[in-house]
Image (cartoon, rainbow, N blue to C red; front, side, top):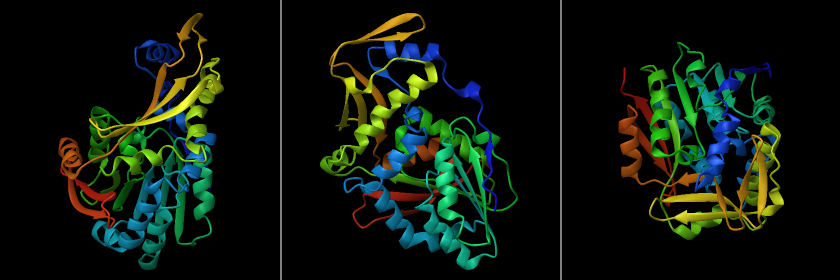
Length: 321
C-alpha cells in the first residue's frame, strides 16, 4: 500500500484576492467555509467531533455500526470513494465490514487537506493486506470531474453532514455533479443532520472547552497566510446562532474592537460588533432533503437513522443514466 498523495486540485480554482475583498466589503461580510480546513483546521475539527456536545459524529458512527452490512449488501460496492474524508475513523467501520466478504477492496480518500489524508492513511494502513488505499488531494466542489472512473461498482461517501454547509444552489450543483459521474452500478451514501431541538443543535457548535472557537478563529490565520492580510484573531469572538426560519446554524466571527484590514492597497474598516459569516450548517427534514435529491438527479433507495431520528444516512443512486 502506498501513501503517496495525488494532487488534482487546480490553484486557479481558489478565489482571488479581489473576490475576497468584495466578500469582506458587503453588508454581510463572509469568508468561504473551505478556508476553515487547512491542516490545523482539520485537526481541530477532529477534536470537535470528539466533544460531548457534538452529537453528529458519534450518531453517524452508531448508524454505520448498525447498518454497514445492509449498506454494503444493497450497494454491492467493490470500491469506496470518500469526499472530504478527514481522518476516516467513521468510514473504518464500513471498510472493516466490507473486508469480511471481499478478497480485495479499494478505498480512495479525497480531501483538501494533506494532513487529513495522512491521518486517514495512518488510521487505515494496518487493517488488511486486502485493502488498497489511494490518497487524492483536491477540492470536492471543483474537482469531482477530475476523479478517475472505474469499472467496479463504486460507493461514493459524503459523510459528516457536510452538505449542510452549502446553500441550496451549491448543494444541488454539487450533488448533480456526483450523479452525473455515477454509473448505473454506483451509489452515494450521504450523511444528513435532521431538524431537532434547537438547544441540542446550538450546543454542538458552542462546546464548553472552546475548541469550536479556536477552529472558527483559525480561518483568519489561513487567509492571512494565503493573501498576506493582517487580521488579528484575538480581536474577534466566536458566535454560533441557530436561525429557526432557515433551519440552520450560522457561525460568525464578531469583531470586539474597531480595526482596519489592509487589502489590495486599500483598507477595509471593521467596526466593533461587525460579523463575518464563516459557515452555515443546515438541518433538514425528509421533505426538504428529498426535494434537493429530485433536483440533483438522485433517487433515495434507503434511509438509515438513529433511534432519535437526529441523523440519517441516505443511500442514493443516479436516475440520469
